[in-house]
Image (cartoon, rainbow, N blue to C red):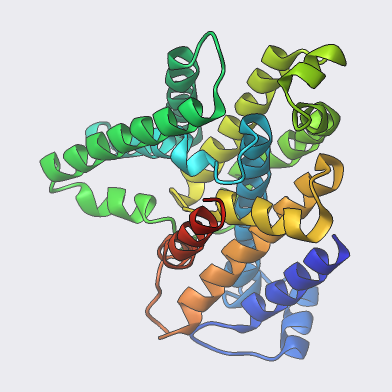
Length: 311
């Protein structure tokens, strides 16, 4: 956990120094201490953008750990369970059909909840981790198809929607950071599920024997994952594979105990998203590559490698 915190701190410093204009760590320190609203480079741009990336990455990492804990499958994540695509579809629908309405976090939450509810309803009764994951892939594909249809049928408004669906931290500042503040108490509440998730990892029969209320724990964990993912998507758009990779790396660092796994996955998720955003800004400034594109480029091969190892 300490190593993850050190990596995150180092990446935050690199993010504050990197961009169209490269500045030294000492200059960053002086600019932060000045608290000057006229300072666009650090105080008004890179600092809130970095904090936004940290909160979103941490939320996605914790959400991924919750989903993997419930399904007992390290290949599961909000990306393939309908939550991310459901939230993205809701955001696209509002931007394309009702532009100017606002309240994107609310609609994103509804979309993510709808995806999770559809998935839970389909898997009502006997719970099978494999069936749950496969049906989640089908739900995600359906939502993605509807999103593409909306984009194709609204060519005038498509640019605004695409900017919100690429998974980017571009132009994210202090107002967006305020929308993400609910993520902090949500992640703290998620920590209360650590012990029940540890018991579920022992198997359903053992969990029942130890008095664990499986249905309640599953609903609570899925609800937490939906809220964390949906709020994140409402600000940055769908950012793929962070919720898959971060918990897996955390498990290799601190083991499977969720009391340490959840915060470590959050820190690694924040580090992954921050690194992707910094790399996207630093490859060919002033042009930027969306962070979601880079996480997908890195995450997809990593996912295939995980599949190969779990054969």
